Image (cartoon, rainbow, N blue to C red; front, side, top):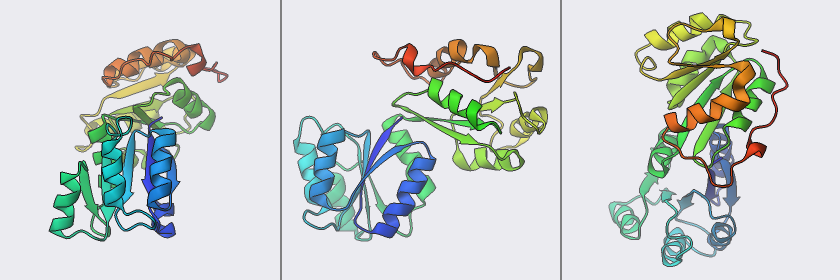
Length: 253
């Protein structure tokens, strides 16, 4: 699970961004001032940092300078977020090594999340399943520091959810679905915004769905899903990943 550090002193904005980022699948650490943010970066070495400029104790520019001067932290992509968005501020932030600059109030939170994903090489999988336990099993099997897994259980608006979330892969869990997985797949493949997205059907052997790009039998979730999905998304297996990353599946096919 990718880890993002949010350095933002406004409690309201912090809550909104934390909720959105966590809903997207990020592990989020929040800091309320520049000194705390720098200490948090040193402690957790996140995959990305979203950094305000106007902060107590140490402003965002100084935090960015210190991050870039630290060999352990200089590799971390930093995205600036501020009301202080005059052209000179933007150019100064970029000259210090910021990857991108977002103006509060005019930058879409969804766009920010998608750009952070793209800049950091993070991939996203949307899991469509009415069974929370089965969706959790899929998430557990696919745990990877460069992979966001987001589960969605409302099949009525499944296609709209996929369109808005812009994932790199959709996993459609047909097992236990009360709705019609064939209809959902048909909608995904005929809606212009989603028809080019690869769809992996996770179902019983007897449920093979036509028009699905890939298929994994539910009974083989632990053995087959991860080896198929990671190469498909261009992700490599982590050296320390082992059997513990794939808990036993307790749901029947």
